[in-house]
Length: 625
Image (cartoon, rainbow, N blue to C red; front, top):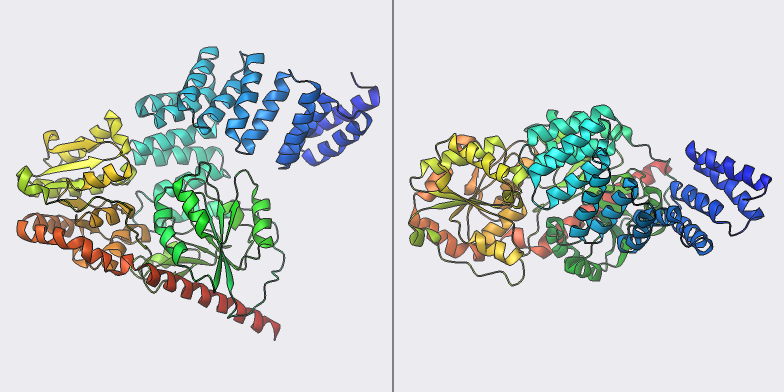
């Protein structure tokens, strides 16, 4: 045991830590350490205080030093494992957390942490087994139920996931993560109204919860028809941001100089955003623009490597607090910072809120608003930004691009366009490959009417969610209400890219989802020769189909009412010769269209950046006079 004066400093540090005063805890514990260098207990508590303060690298060094003195201490291994998890070094965390769990096999906290580290390091089966072990230790642990629910959802056991989520909420009603898991599970089952209610319940429990608000905002886009349905949670989320006062910017206000553009995203990987971002990144004028990518990718893949090779500089944001990322962006001298995620998973709007760049914009994640006044512009095109309606939604100024919001590059080695399937099948096959959460009751009703209007037709639907019977029942029930029997429906589950593209070839006409339209799936269908009929709404998210089809040179496929949607679908299906001719020509038409004009799209984006920069320079000159 340390001498009494050291013991007093140690206890003072512990008390400060428990009170959330980690800065004062650090001071007291460092003072104790001066009297007892290398003491494992002091080092352990100091490591915990440093972790609370966001000094994660220092915390890890302290934990390692403590373990040298006490290598079999389960609590220190648990601390070290949690620090490595905070650093997102999940594979390195697993051995420490295994040692901690072996030292205390009845601790569900340690098993929960171990399961999470195993999951994030790619050991799906190990994570599930660990959480099942934790449940056997304590069947009434709400956190275990919540984690097991998330694992079951990932493994196609959505109904079991719902049951575990509801049990977690029953055991611990204020466990925000359980409400979030329940909402996420319900959304993947297509039960978006229930999902939105679950997010609202979590928000009511914790009005400042970024998890609940961000999830609610994103979920509402799947059902919202107008700006009024989105504004309240977006405004609440923005009010909850508490950025530190921004220091003056030191950039030279020269309107013609080369600019440093920063792109911030968790999706620099095989994700829909990157498939549109890659051609822009590849075509940027490097004499006029230096490109910095701030990546939140936890599991890099082939696309990560490709994008890294195209960037002027690459910075990882994994495990870094908002202030540290903002400081890096300032140190890099970024002139225009562009967020590519908005409220989707893994976003770093907390960084954007710190105002680390003179000009900040949002683009490409999905067309909507961040709700942040720290974001100056939202980039849309003229089809997405319906006059008046976009302004009613967006807190930012709307910057209407000269060309297309989307820049499509076809997947390499994609299959050739296959012959029309209707002649060999003897019937028209409709299809959708959209994210299942996008299939709203209104969209399903319109699809059902369209299928019912074409005698003998069938519909093919592919999504990961169809592994679960309740997702299939949702579709069957919705289509049955329009007179479409279950034997006219074919379900397929998610497949690798080339198999998915080949599956599109089995469809004669694709049906777009609404109010949240398809983007990537629409482009892929067109590339495979399959026309897509869309319904344009009021919000930008409801006009993505309009944007894609307009820039693809196919505006005739856009409907503006549900009745018009059904009529367009039936008309296409009723002219077999025209449908076959369209299919044969579509890939060439698409390749020659504005949608695939990579250089043109990039120059349009660069003109927007240059014009934004001139506005900022002019504002500085006006302020100086």
